[in-house]
Amino acid sequence: MDWRHRAICRDEDPELFFPLGDKFLDTSNPASPLAQQITEAKAICSRCPVILDCRSWARAAGMTGIWGGTTEDERAALPAPARRITFPGPAVAAGRRRR
Image (cartoon, rainbow, N blue to C red; front, side, top):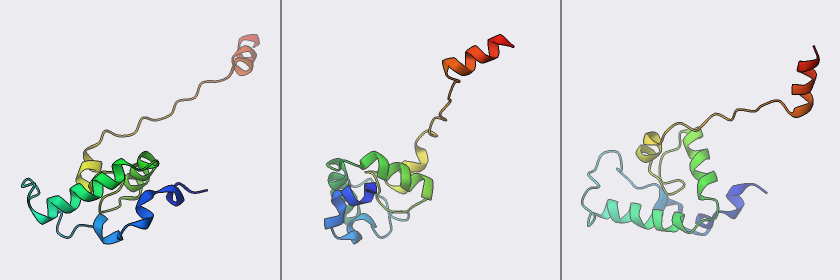
C-alpha cells in the first residue's frame, strides 16, 4: 500500500495545505490568516504516521504547499539527503582477496 493511503490529511480539505500567497506574504506575524492556515496544516501533519515519506516525496517532486509538515521554502532549506553507500558483503570481499 502506498504511503499516501495512510496519510491523515486525506480526510481534510486540500485547500488547507495550499495557502494562497505563501511566497508573497509575510508569515512572520503569527496572527495573520496565512500564518494561521500554515500552522493549522502543520498541526495535522505533526500527527501523521507518514510525515517523513510525505516530506521526502514532496521534496523530490518539487511540490508546492504544505507537505510533511513543511512549506516549500522550508523543504528547500533542508540539507541534501545522504547518499546510501553500500559495501560488498563478506562473500564478495573474500572473493576479491583470493585473486
